[in-house]
Length: 211
Ligand SMILES: NC(=O)c1ccc[n+]([C@@H]2O[C@H](COP(=O)([O-])OP(=O)(O)OC[C@H]3O[C@@H](n4cnc5c(N)ncnc54)[C@H](OP(=O)(O)O)[C@@H]3O)[C@@H](O)[C@H]2O)c1
Image 1 (spheres, helix red, strand yellow):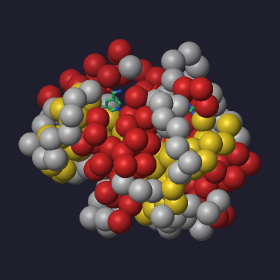
Image 2: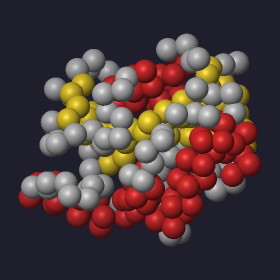
Image 3: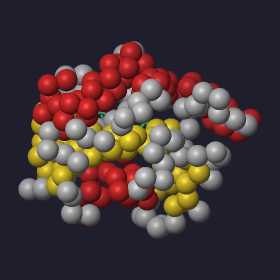
């Protein structure tokens, strides 16, 4: 199966790309700087460009069965506006090329409308907003667009602290409350890829953690 991975040069995206290659996927990536890719393989087709370029996004998605979006806000500009645009381009490109499934990374900074949020989560969201404003703004914008999408099977995977440690194979997910505060990179990458063929979390934003 061929999939598109966005944000493949990032902390999360590199792990998703690595896991996808280990699982035997053919992958198309859209990256601004191919030199930042951590691995090379004849199973990876690299397209150079920005997520804000709709022609490049459509070229990347063409021929793929699903999109795994590991892109996140970067420092230095208005990431809320950037990701309103980026997510709009992405969902429109998915509709044009006929891809239904989108698995996207998100964080504990993101609170859904009408979601119950206890003290601990509100505190975490506030901290993320102070120290990682670019990340929180980008994913808040993305979520705003995704929540309006009924004809795309999106899943927004929320992680808190991501550890650069080996996989545990013990991942728990819950869309009502945080089941834990930490997850390893390879566990997160595997969970995201598992959602390509799993319909349990469609139109939801589950928190993931290691048990
Ligand atoms: N890092 C964590 O500890 C953590 C914890 C919990 C949740 N999360 C979630 O994971 C998300 C990603 O985090 P991360 O640490 O992987 O971020 P990161 O290392 O900064 O990676 C962001 C990725 O998005 C890409 N990107 C951003 N704007 C782009 C554009 N216009 N065109 C093309 N590519 C673009 C970046 O490309 P370039 O390489 O070209 O900049 C990079 O590949 C966060 O936003 C957050 O929601 C992260």
